[in-house]
Image (cartoon, rainbow, N blue to C red; front, side, top):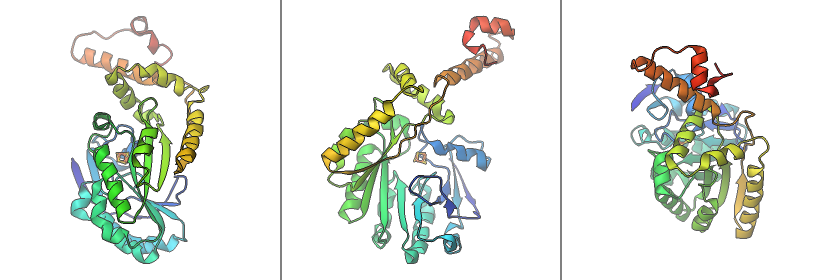
Amino acid sequence: MVMKEIVAKHILTKSNLPDSDFVINPYTGCTHACIYCYARFMKRFTNHPEEWGKFIDVKINAPELVSRDMQKYKGEFITIGSVTDPYNPAERKYKITRQILEKLLPYQPEFDILTKSNLVLRDLDLLKKFKKLIVAISLSTLDPNISKQTEPFAYLPAERINILKSLHKEGIHTALFISPIFPYITDWKAVILKTKGFVDEYWFENLNLYPSIRGNILSFLESKDWGLIDKYRKIYSPISTYWEDMEKEIKAFCKEQKVKGTVYFHHNVSKKPVFETELVIRKINQIEAEIKAGKRKLVGREEAFKEYPELKGLL
Ligand code: SF4
């Protein structure tokens, strides 16, 4: 793990998230290394050669920036932790998130904190002093084995559920962010039934197959041998109504269970079959590795097409 202290220019930045106007990210990078993390695009902006999950930049001056940046704040909604976990292990030492909260206290902003870590409980004394705060824990499965594969360094689902219980007991408004919903894997109904006694509201987000994570998701599905790849291809095809149908089902179930639920589904679909590009990239990598290892001589284009017809049109 590469950990570096950096000096940030701003700490309150405009948000692209629905229902949130500004974001605060006390760190860049996230040690949980979730395979579905869309925030890995941050790597591009930071010149980190390390993989996503293997670096963390500590915005060492972030607390000092709060008062200045809050001058542009006019009662809008703030999210803490949109592209990092503000309670990642570095927070134990640096306490940047805690210091930011101390600085935010006089403003009493309307905000939420997104985390998968029980370190949030360390700051209960402070959290209780905010009047319009939601602490949201995200979860995509109740199964510890799936979680170990998809969110390798995050707290296990049962531990995250305990965090919600503790927060609720202390009078903190809690949200369970069921995200991402993996088709045929995430049993969101079971999650609601297990937690509704201590969760004030539920948020739902579907698995969005961004190009940057498709390779990870494909490897995960292959490792499971559950025959899901073809099912995912159908779900992510332009004619599928899978997510629209699920959205209706979620709303009906929340109503039936008398719980508050908000659906944040993306409906972006690719015109190309969803995993094709990844399969071709793999094939190209395999050819290159074989050439490097001396197992294969450089193949001519036509020869390559004969052997791997799926490369046609892509090379
Ligand atoms: S906890 Fe959130 S920010 Fe961190 S790796 Fe997972 S999805 Fe990304």
